[in-house]
Length: 549
Image (cartoon, rainbow, N blue to C red; front, side, top):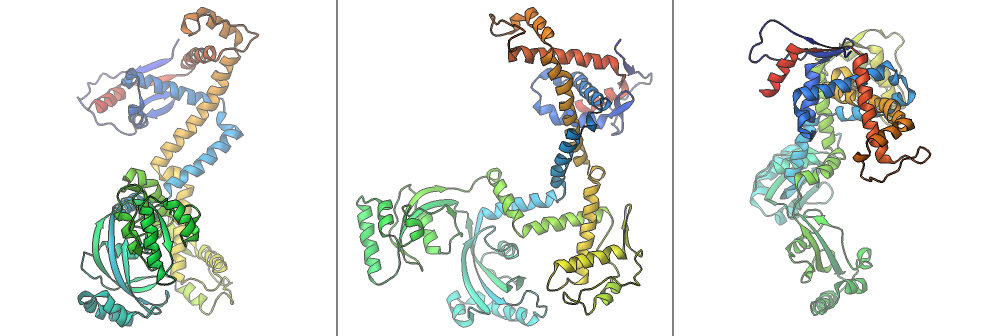
């Protein structure tokens, strides 16, 4: 007899009752399955279901009960103890965890920002005064650039170049057009946040202090592929010769053949002058770039143009507009991960962990500051013998970090930094970041609900595959007598009505697959009879009302 029982309640239900995430929808051998778990799977798979009957909550519930029956059977038969299963699960969990150890919101925000900036190009110029990256006394430099702002606003760039540019300490430069990832992120952000015609206040990058003027903003020109024939400016004959070559090409001469024979760009002449695709702002020549993007018709030839490199004739091979966000997302994400933007995502994630565990970077580090005085990579610091090793530095959840923990971290970090050690506060910040990250990663199943859901789905799916392979698919395939009987009784189900089935011969795959389905149904029926299943009718009704609403 099928051992499925329904809980019935005499008390009437309200027209709609709020579902409690801890409501137990059903149990299998006293092991509960909550409404929250069932609804999550139901809603997740709803759009993937092609069989409309399965969208019915009662039908889907039966399918989910069957699924959980299989999971229960897998645990009962200890499939979770198999070495191959444990190895595969551990490998997957390590891969999966990487998707939960960064701030996705911050990453998504930077992706959208990067695409928006890629779609808008900025023409800018700047004045840079170089200073050492570790120099802290920068007030004079800052004030000097403040005094330059008025001149920058009123005078042409050529005047400022002659007056201030020395190519060593002070640089005055026209940067041309650029978009996302062409400049370091801090510089790029100032440029995109400065309005046309305005000049920024002095700001610092790793190169020094800058002031920046935005001259223009325009929509991205997209991407272009051109070839070029180049002549170096060896003498006055170069201009005459490039015009003669242009005249010959215009009258039907083959551009690629002329490039192979006459071009001084030896990197491209052997392939007929063709260059790799590029976007605006990507080349170190504004005249060349402008000429390339002015070409509109495929195979169109430009008139000779002059750049600082020489004279050029261009040919257009392809031209495309900016791709969609969806198309560009993979490449943008790769650039973000290889860019200083990645540190923003990391820092944001650490801040979330700090908030989660009610921590901050403030602490009394005077003991370590005093102890470290006078030490360097040549005079390596050692943990003091009289240090109170067990003195508590900080605590979160069930983790305690002591003076000894931090002292060991300092020793390890000193070995990594060959020339000097970090400021003690920087070391402490790194120590906290590493500690909370290690804790979060080690406790990911309890700390992150989404990870727990995905991990458990894979864990059960892997169990079910091993179970089904051993208990259903292989057994059905090896059941030659059952296969023959099934075939003889159901010949009308097969496409080849003249198919002959001999046990001695290889069994047709179509017969095996159909028999496996029948075998599985009988097997599931036996599981239903073997295990005790309770369905909570009251909770089921609440669940249906929740879905309908």
